[in-house]
Length: 214
DNA sequence: CCCAAGACTCGGTTACATCA
DNA sequence: CTGATGTAACCGAGTCTTGG
Image 1 (cartoon, rainbow, N blue to C red):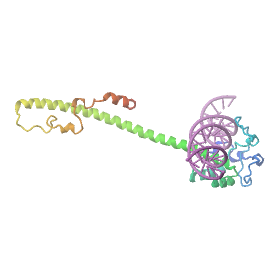
Image 2 (cartoon, rainbow, N blue to C red):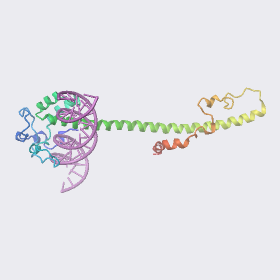
Image 3 (tube, chains in turn green, purple, blue):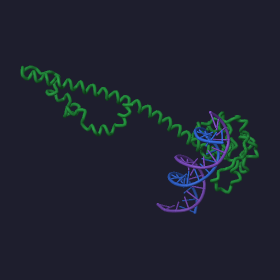
Image 4 (tube, rainbow, N blue to C red):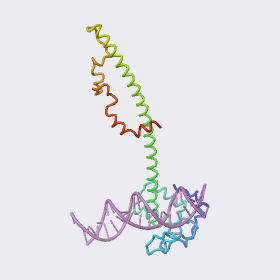
């Protein structure tokens, strides 16, 4: 996020005397947007280069014009080829290295933001899915109960009808007579219909169940 | 094909300015 | 004054290209 509005004084406060441009910066100072009018800053201690002299003026805030133009270019493409970088640097009155660094940092910020957005989207999808799973599990339980009741009912009825008439047409709803009813689901063991491999299931999905309980 | 040098990128870090 | 935040600059490691 790049906003000069967060810096007190706006652009006028960012004016930097041309004398503060490092001597090695010969990038059309006339065309160069002015920099912030702050004292040359101490450079990082870690720096071990011999060119410590021009380190002092390095960390300058870029002006809003510079940032705008950089942003425009970044909007077009996230990577600059060498020639374009040099032209842009000349146009901005910056060292091509500075332009390269700006693009590098900008890519990093863009990536971070993108990851954040992706994470947020995935999180929403995940939460929706977990919710849906909870509903489906509740429905499975309900259906399981209904199935169990129906099974009992069928057993009762068949026990009764066994004693009465063996020749009459059997009910169309008979699991004994119609193994396809459950066999179609690949289920052989009716009693264990919802309980086989339960331990694995619980271990594997424990985190989801915890979410359901939240 | 191998290797060294240079250019470039990336992730991580540092130093600094600014703000609440 | 202080901690949090944003960002320019830096660093080290990795990749790719090029020339010998």
